[in-house]
Amino acid sequence: MLRVSDDEAASVASQAEPCGRLEIFRAKRGPDLFRAYHVLVDGADIGEVRRGQSRLFDISTGRHEVHLVIDWARSPSIDIDLVSGETAKLVCWPKFHFGQAKKAMANSDEWISVRCELSCHRVMALAAGFAVRRWPS
Image 1 (cartoon, rainbow, N blue to C red):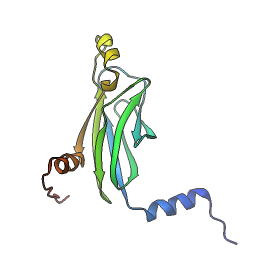
Image 2 (image 1 turned 30 degrees about the horizontal axis):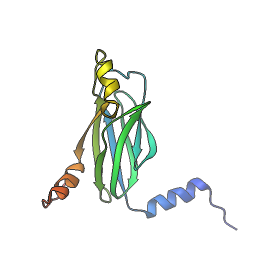
Image 3 (image 1 turned 30 degrees about the vertical axis):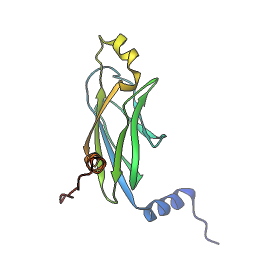
């Protein structure tokens, strides 16, 4: 009888599913110097990104809600729509600087700024009713 380890089974399963990628770059600025931002996709924690770091995550194709969390604070949610082989790119950084603690406490849902570089624009255009042209890569 042939036995397959859990890692091998997961690898085969992930190859069978169409998959896209989510790349997140965290800029080197502002507070949160030594703490990581947790990356949540559809409510599931898929990893973390540290100051000055770029991380790449494999996620399934389709629409997803992405946001970043640190302690009690978070970023606004970003919707992405991935097709197989596509990479959605996000850039994040702390919104408030060291002297804005009071303002930051009042706006914990906006502690982290996040901007979409690719793939999110397709979702925004579809929501607005515009046709989207796919550019060659």
